[in-house]
Structure formats: structure tokens, C-alpha cells
Amino acid sequence: MAAAAHLRCHIAFSSASNARRHTQASSAPSLSRGRLPAARKPPVARCQRHGAVGALEPDGGATTRRPAPRFLCLHGFRTSGEIMRRQVADRWPAGVTSRLDLAFADAPFPAEGESPVRGVFDPPYYEWCRFVGEDFLRYKNFGESLASIEELMVREGPFDGLFGFSQGALLSAALVGLQEQGLALNRVPRVKHVVIISGAKIQAPALAAKAYANKISCTSLHFIGDVDFVKAHGEELADSFVDPLVIRHPAGHTVPRFDEKGLQMMLSYLDKIERDPARE
Image (tube, rainbow, N blue to C red; front, side):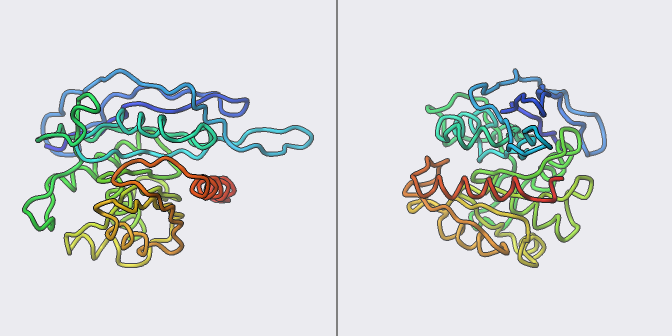
């Protein structure tokens, strides 16, 4: 039975033109047949010090704020939406996070093994899917995870983009590629932007042939660490996009802090997506 992803928390905010606040949602219905799973209702976490006020725009003689680009955030393997929220909030400056409306989801499946962050971040831990075998060519629960993400996007959207770390980055990139082929996310608007941290391409041949059949056209930003064990895979993934922007950093498999060059590149990326006419 397919479990359902749910929103763990939001970084969301009020301004003169964007006064709504996001609230906790109950679990989405299962997409499989049979009895629906019991809804999990974790507390809603918020990060009030990062207000997504959006971009300033002239409106006649007045100045208004355009709502910040809204991203659904997919966490890494055997972590959680709350852990990813803390990583982003603690490491990225307010000058970046204040220009993003970030909604963090928990994966639909409880972790079935040891978490790589145990001892650093408290449980609960979740996973989107699991590799089957040592060759990484097969996945357990992959289809169910894609279905639950789409259900979440239908209920909580619209979203301008996807933002993924590690396993969440793998899924984010695959989803936009599959959507452009008409094979996924057919019930939601086109994903216009994707942010990839420590990402990689799907290795399963049948899935990869579909997800990367053509260069992916949506606006993409890739963070690649010099000592990340998936660095080569991240480079390969970036090459699967039409015009990727790559921010390199000296760290490993982590949500990185910005140096001055990386920060300027990030701010330029935000300028670009805020001007995107598709957001009108």
C-alpha cells in the first residue's frame, strides 16, 4: 500500500501582497486500492526569522511585493523535512531564504534502517525509496513515492519549483524530466525551476531512459561539492539540463554554506526566477 507524503513544515510569510500563512495539512489519501493509511499529524515547525517577502515591483506610483517563488523541498535518505529545514535555515543567510517560500515534506515511508544523521539530528526519519541490490539499478517504492509527491502537490500547490537534497535531489530532477515527457506530474502545472544539492541521475536503465530522454529545459541550479562522494554523478546530472547553473563548494555531501562567489551566483539565480514571465 502506498503511503502518503505530507508537509512537515513551511518557511512561509506575510507581506503587503502575500498575507497568507501556510498551515499543517493532513496526510494525502493513498493512491493504492484498499484501506487508507492512518494520517500522521506531526507538529508544524516554522522558521519565522526567514520571511519570504518576495520581490519588489513598481505598481503605478506605489511599490508592491510579488510573492516569493514557492518550492516543494524533498529531503535526503532517512532524514526528514524538519531536518532539511534546519539545515537550510541554519546555513543559508536571510538574504537568500527571505526570497523563497519553502515547504518541507516528509517522505511517505519510515526509515527501514540506520539514519546517516543519527546522533546529529533527532528522529523520526523517513525515506522516499530504497535501492535493491548493490548495483543501485533497482528501487523499492519509487513509483509510490512519485505518486505521493504528486498528490501532495495537487493538495498543497501550486508550486513554482522543486528543491531536493541527496535522494530528494535525485527525485526532483527525475520528476521534472519525466514531467517534460508527459510521464509524471500530469495533474499539476509545469515545474518551472529546480534546485539540486548533492544530486545524481537515476541509475535504473528503464527509468533513466525516460527521465533523461532529452535535455531538461526547466531552470536548474546545482550545488556540487569538491569532496562529495556523488560529485561525478552530480556533474553528469547537471549536463542533463539545457542551461544549468552550477555552484561549486569545498564541502562534501551536505547543504553547503555560501562563500562570496556562491552567494552572488545564488542571488543572480533568484533574480532570474523572480523575473520569469511564466510566474505571471
